[in-house]
Length: 467
Image (cartoon, rainbow, N blue to C red; front, side, top):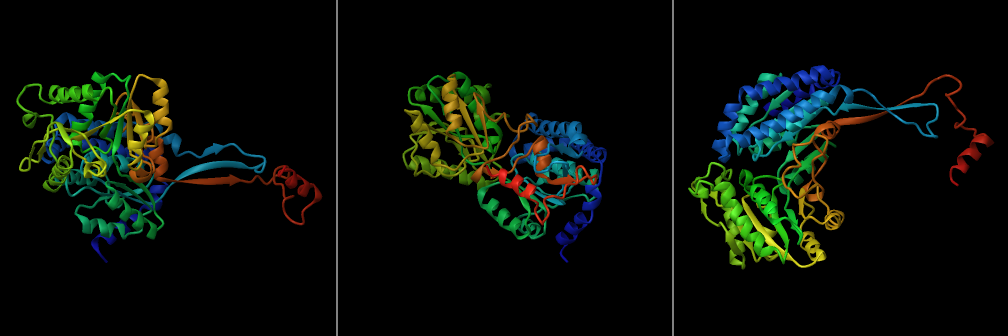
């Protein structure tokens, strides 16, 4: 028996005990994890700086997201685990109906590298809250963070309830060969397909969070100063390695030139306020590794070769894994950058004349994880919301919908993902909503008239239901 299979079976052996654990016991486990995170926060800051060149405030923001989720779950879990009474119907007359949320069993969380603490812990919070055992596979591209996360988890919980599996593709493949009951995956489409196929072998449910090319619409009424400021932040944050980052801007042709000037200025104002150069800014992170750096610079080169114009940026340093925040225009659909998620600090700008034309540009790509609309026109906002599809949408802001409000479910649609996380929706995702009906045995409610031989009264009653 392989080591991974042995560790999986150890997790599996705890499922009944965990299913029957109380809300208080589960909350205690979550609080233990949080205390471990706080004890290692300086180490996590250092790991984030080493791996992505992130400012400690940016890593702290990830941890705040985790704390918000733990606090929300801790406040509401006792209510969630109670049987939920539901109303009856004419057909269920005399019976009592309820829903009980039971654990699925063993959950696998395959996390990405761009926000390793949040992506490892937030799904784990939901899994533990629902009474599951959890296996966490951190990204091998963020090894320093992965090691700290493993130590936190193993300090807080026994390995029979929560285990961390480090390694690359081979480890992921062997994990996916195990009969997990639910798999939560964060990453790209290609691996997402592999996860779905592996889940099918064991009839496991899945949550897929896969990003995509999230569009921005800026109409002729938008506050451009406001839009440019927020979009400069949204695209440079974490060096663009954010699943909900704005990928490309579809701006009304009457505002294009002004917007391009403003966003160029805002990038400098936000990230080069000391005038030392963007490459020396403590707020401009780095690309995770050399392979992704080469991929992103290749997308820029391909676009320029095919006619794109660099509005601002374009410089890169492979040794430092640095890519200058870049804005491109004069885009065409044959450019690779218009058909591949960049996951880097590069934004494309495309003009539109009519609303229909804006929708046509967006329709060339699969439904995204997020969409952003900048406008002062309520009718236009409603038009764009009604005629597009995305996992989430934000009006007059960007990148603020994830990890900030546990009452809002987070997730994708189609190629950008499936399933939801956050708050009660995350708890439900990791639970089996078990429908239960109770039949009282007193003669007034235990009605047996539906059994054959059918009485004339019952036949008339059923046939009347067809009218």
